[in-house]
Image (cartoon, rainbow, N blue to C red; front, side, top):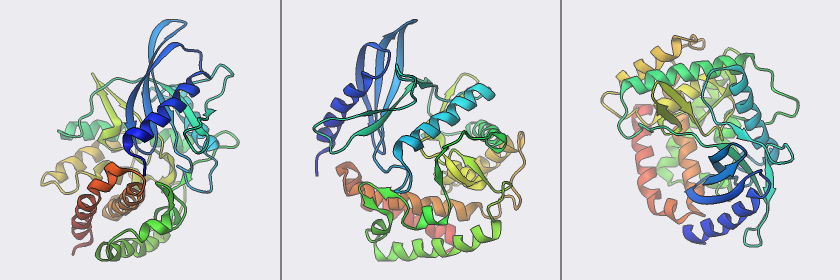
Length: 338
């Protein structure tokens, strides 16, 4: 297994190749993060003067084995483009290549296969996930409802291809975590925790069957809209990281925003604030919050499988795996009433 430093160094060389596709002068790369995607800040000159961007090097099969990566990333950027054109929401601005494309492909001898890359204009703001207050959730709920309103009336262009966050994606063998198929990631979960995962999967089969897949329950969602993906700038909330966006339950988006707060003693304040912000712009889906904890448990399972699979190729994840799975087990005990 390559160290993180070795992986980043190889992808940095590939990222430099990708920059050649964009109308940037004297671009400088600065590493940001190495996770699902590897990201770099880019400082460069453009026609209007100095500017800053985020370059994303996308992991192959990031969106499941059934979706072409270039089509999936391009579709994400199609939605961002539409959101910027149709709403007043602050979301990342895709930057096109010199050939007018939303994505480019780059290759390096040190990386096993070509990677899809994309460029976004940089967004500033503060992240409040470490010291959240109810007001942050209220504002996040307001933005989420407006995202859902747009998704509910927007007609995606031909060829639009994004993940479907259905039962098979959460619990079956659709996704690739790290470099292994989801079915094999289940085998990495300790037996006692695996039993809890199995129970959530069984429960959610019934829940999803009961809810159905009509437009009142399912639509195009962000799917990762927690406080780490919200930048607060003055009175604005800037939503980033649409990499998981796809077709799923509206309630799942709400669950993800509350997922990391569920264990707190003041959780009810955060939940109330999020729902107040949401319902100012959009009613809750039929059934309200009846299955909110079921979807939070689903998020715990999805996160656990992703983390375990990623730990197979990322030493940093491997070092924390036991602790992370322990936290998930405790959370599921609460959510399942054990």
